Image 1 (cartoon, one colour):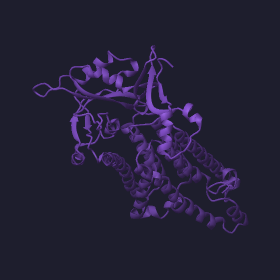
Image 2 (cartoon, rainbow, N blue to C red):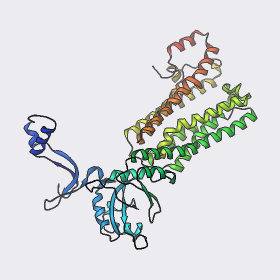
Image 3 (cartoon, rainbow, N blue to C red):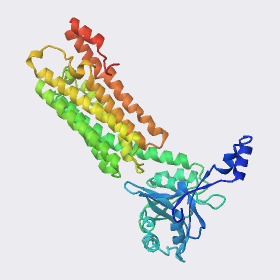
Image 4 (cartoon, rainbow, N blue to C red):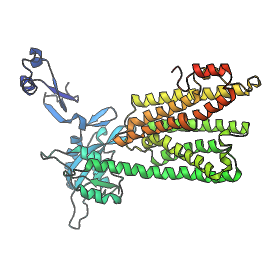
Length: 469
């Protein structure tokens, strides 16, 4: 269609002959020679005079809102500036618009080595000459050399990889030297820029190392806050010999760490907002419920002996710190991601799992508290409502909601090591089913009702965790 940008497809007998030769396919059907179109991967359009213009590769186009922007158009305008030696334009991810055009520019210097133009001047120069979607909303970054292949074509994926490393600190200098990468500073915006050369054979490993190290330093900061809170409150709880604010401290730490991570590291993407809100809702609800319960009952039998021994009590508080940071790990990595892809089915699946798990946990806790508040049920075990299809439906909901948050967080993962955070829901499941959740409650139930035939039947006919399984 004239004037409209579309993918370029071609058909020709020569192409089908090449397919027959390459894949050893004899006598392709006749319709392949006349009706089959081959996608070239290029984008182009016809003008009013039926001339075909090829503007670039589809995968290199910048996706601004619902429009496709060709980097070559912007590069052409920038090259008309007398102070520009070379230029390459890539898409800078944006939470709302998709991508913004970002220009890497090699500029000319005067005799004293000073730049002949500033980044702002180049932005203004370009924006006056291009249409709205081609505006340099991503800015201009100065670079020593544009990476090109042996045919002179810009290697844009190296410039995109460059965005991942822009926050790397000076302690990486030795690694940059290993792969022949220099450093410079953007003139005008004063942002650190990594200049990637064509011969950077270690680039992928460098990006992985940078991402792991930066994530580790952020997690170390959050972990210090987490364990600092637990150990300070351990000292207070040991001095007072009380366990009443143990669970409140745990849920409050969840909320605090999630909020700090969002406030300090998030780009504000809708995904991070939903994920953080889900964690805060869970933490506030659980903390209020558990704190109210322990105040009402006056004690928590889990800590009957532990609170008398500070060293044993310390283990419990430390384990709570581990529980907080490990359980939050996938969500923290997701919040820290600077490049947030559009919402996907994986996000919605994860949040649906969280919602089902959250509702299950809330309903199970409510049913149990109502059961206990009825004087007629004194000394009895609950086997109604959700408790009729699972002996621990609240724990089932707990595991399900955190598996859901891992699922949604995984939609942003781009490195293999990030998927190792699947150990987070696995650790939580082990903690609940083998250590502090199910085992002591099962033991307590056997001690209290183990001789009752109806309790024996309940154990036999009701799954421990997953309903109907």
